[in-house]
Length: 317
Image (cartoon, rainbow, N blue to C red; front, side, top):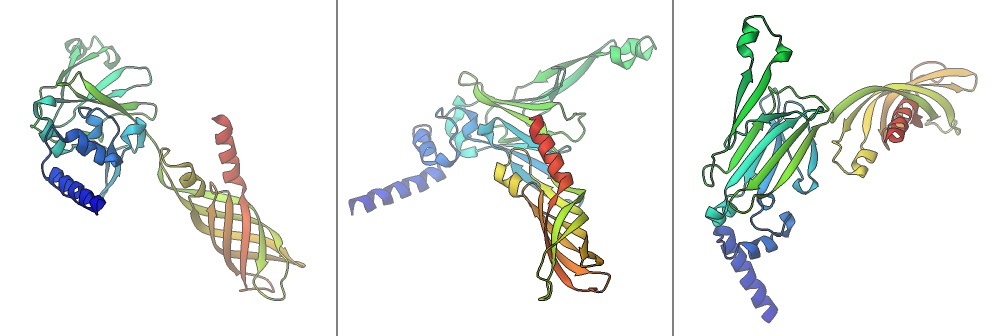
């Protein structure tokens, strides 16, 4: 009975805390929210920040993906927008103990840095040296030196979110997008997030290999070796996804099989599904020629092309 009363009191207290959190009970509230507790420091923005990738589509809808902040590194698509949200209850509870600074920049392969605007927090002004000389024809574009003035005068309460639009930025696959989010009111405690471009999403490619085919009729009791060729569509997960998601990620597509049935060369057409890094395929269809025309069959095989690409990629790591 006593346990039930304590549990009920805790439930009521959490409900009240959800409505209004003060600085005195913020640490206890954070401990009860262990699903998103990355630091024991209640002033560290990593505990009340959400960073989301927004990928605009032609039809007007957006695809979103929430980055894992505790990983420190994640992957995004070209043309994406980075949206940053701060939990309003935390900021209101911290009050003057929170003064957020959000900085973002592109780190090039040659280690040079290009600051980025973070709408709501950071304003970057581009300046250049030798621009007038270029107008007079004395310099080419490679001689111009660019300087940047970064203004970070935003304070707590002015904005609970920010955004970085990468659509118009020139970023290569070797570049990194770096985010620094700090609390200037408490010893600049904060965290860094690094984002790298990745070519994930729906992919399509030719496939071919070796299969065993069996016609689904009683008089056909043996599997026949067959050459297979086709085309597959596969959703490639982003690199930060789990190993099993990559390993089991299926693909599908049309497939042709050519095999000997007794003295007859038979061609079959159908669909196949692949898994295990797209190396093993299972399929079925109907024969389209010969004396066994229009008979159903099923197959199991190996994708030589994908197996070679996968093994080559693993050896390079």
